[in-house]
Amino acid sequence: MTTTSRWPKASAARRLFPDWPEIAAQTAAALRAAADPRDPKTALLVAELEADDGFRGLWARHDARPSRDELKRFVHPVVGELALRRQALTVGGAEQQVIIVYQAARGSPSAAGLARLL
Image (tube, rainbow, N blue to C red):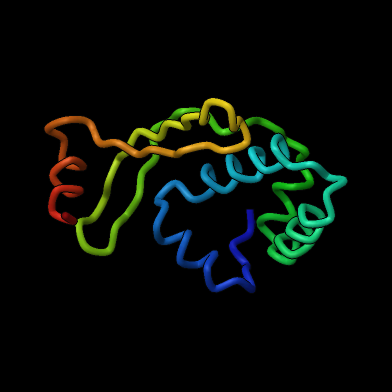
């Protein structure tokens, strides 16, 4: 996957996620799984994202899998690396609304890093 990007936010995201290629592939596959291609807003978003070489290659794979509960690693500019468990919680009666929760394992270096941010 090429790292050429016209989007400044993409560069910031690459620094935030040490596992960038994996995160980018998961995110593109989750978008394909959840998005309605007939929705004009979705079509506009995908067209805009396809300006990025990396996204265009991922989108062309046609991978479609929803995001699952998983461990994600971040590099925070103040506290360093954090390994956090991601969980998606559906709101009862409003299935289109989801709450995303990130949690560090108790007593872990990531828990100590999060505590420093409070």
